[in-house]
Image (cartoon, rainbow, N blue to C red):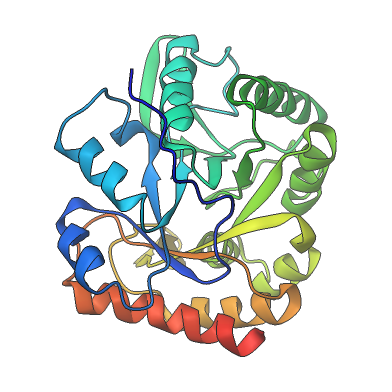
Length: 285
């Protein structure tokens, strides 16, 4: 078992961070520019050692960390996987991140793991199940988690709550915080034909502990309407930047992450995205 890191950052700074990838290690150590904190996907670091763990331990002396889970299936009908929970707890215990988050989604069915984050109907039954899972997770980790709003490609006729109502009610029941993914808001609003500004205005911004920004791809659905895919493989689109500006103007500065997970750019391109977010945050102070 890895020894806990003694140098801890108790909170994320209210400026820009990036999703950490090993190819940026030297850039971060030599000149991080506007990057003030880092986020890792939990499932990539559930091991006892190796180069990846050594890099994270070294970087943790200089940067606050957020751990972002992508495989716990908070919204799944079955119980949370106890082995996954145990490995997640080991990671959180030794790294002692400033923040931990997971998705409002499901990705498992019985013994099968689906490599996707799938949507949920917003009903009282779903609310009870998600809240129970969050209670269990927070008890195991001994800390508050943040729950992220999803990107949606369809809506459920059976939903009786709006997404913002559902998230507010989950937070009220469990004491969790929220992670607001602004790109997800824009993607969902475009796909479902709703207004992203109205979504932000209805969102419980006082509960937001972290914001995500990412790029998306544009496609056309079977009815020749725009279909956006939350791809994390390019720069943040200008309409998403405008929505982020509106969000920060209402909420005030929040730790804000640039997510870029595939087709990775050269460091100056990624750092420029962080610089743009940092500039919006600085203007809001």
